Length: 187
Image (cartoon, rainbow, N blue to C red; front, side, top):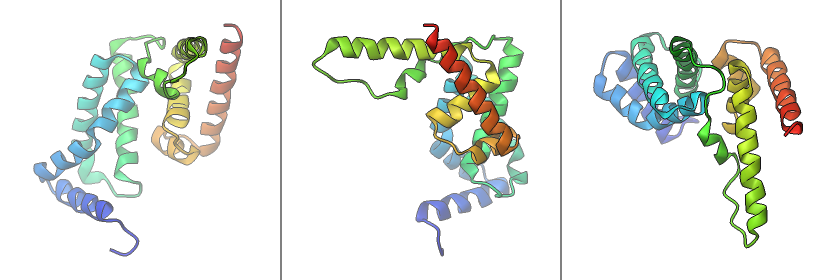
């Protein structure tokens, strides 16, 4: 178990069992990663009901694709990619526009606990403005901003998840942030 934590060893063991068809092992992986899948889907599409559908579909896709999982990346990264792709596909199927709500974006900053209600009000207004601006971004740009600025992913993780180069991830993030800045200047 050189260089691995107990949790990593347990997950590797569960993955090996799940890849060979053990449903109980996969169920254990779902218990460990299911909330993350739903939260990511919710942040990508905004709608809690659509996010629940996306989560379920992503986990079904993961189960079906699990025998082909080579372990080149972490299981969570692989599951993130499936979730992002499923969200993209489901949104196209649902014919939703890119302006769907991202209610959880308000969690970008911790709630401001202060004796100064005017400052708390300004922060709430800024969150609303940011939420609107994110909703107005094209889907691809919004995904990159969510993955980088909310989840804190590296450019390499984003590129792997979205199937693009690291350079493309950096360029798209820069363009998305520039667009957000212009939108927020207009507020």
